[in-house]
Image (cartoon, rainbow, N blue to C red):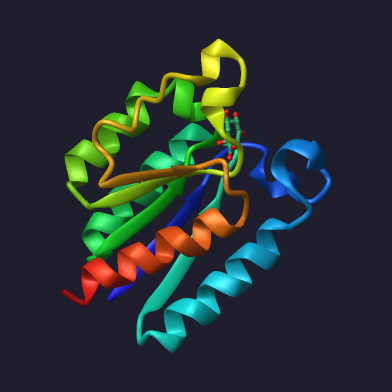
Length: 145
Ligand code: DQA
């Protein structure tokens, strides 16, 4: 099956960005680990990070045309703002897991609400880079059912 990993704004800076909040792992490192994990399980993984909302929306539309089976998504700051990305995921109806490195419920009140959690299959937050691996594990488990 084909799995798409999407990452929103500022996540290209992982490793140097507020490491006390987001950890030391770089996005390249995370994607590398996930790719190995997916391939070992006989699946195919693609990834996009973008700082632009429309690029993420367009990628979600393309995912539908391409037959992507599952999405892992860290919408970053768009988590708390983007009705447009929510609507894109509803439009394509591809199952997805929402991921956050930090525990958004432990942070500022404006981070407590997500436009994605109620339409996600599951949500993982607060476990750092390991959250991506746990999400991929869950996605693979569901795809193999
Ligand atoms: C984040 C949490 C968001 O509130 C924040 O805007 C991010 C990253 C996380 O992974 O913890 O950019 O999604």
